[in-house]
Image (tube, rainbow, N blue to C red; front, side, top):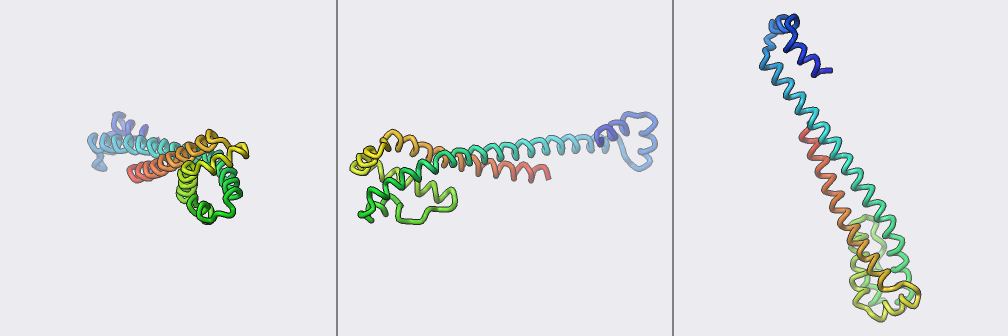
Length: 168
């Protein structure tokens, strides 16, 4: 590999005189070794950052796959209970189409849970359908966890891109 070639060129008494004719001094060889070491370290950092990005994405996807169906169950029951009261549905963002991106979904789900917790009558109706306040609160916390996981994923993307730029 390159490192072995540079070390041999620097240290081997038979090779060094041959390459010194090409103006390759010990200092230049040392400089190239340092450059190579820095490149290898930067490449390892890039690989680790991209691995962290993949882990963050997998965690986000897993959390979203756990949280979304429960949110949909809660939202569908709330729509059923409030079907004649469009103001209540609008207040909980249940009249708007489901957002296709994660940021929009988080905003909708967070608004739903925040406003639903202010509606004690709706909570009582949901509890009659076996959706307890504890279940609502637990999924509300999961929505917040999805939001945190999204931020961490976006940070991991930035770090992966920065580590690639440093390596390049």
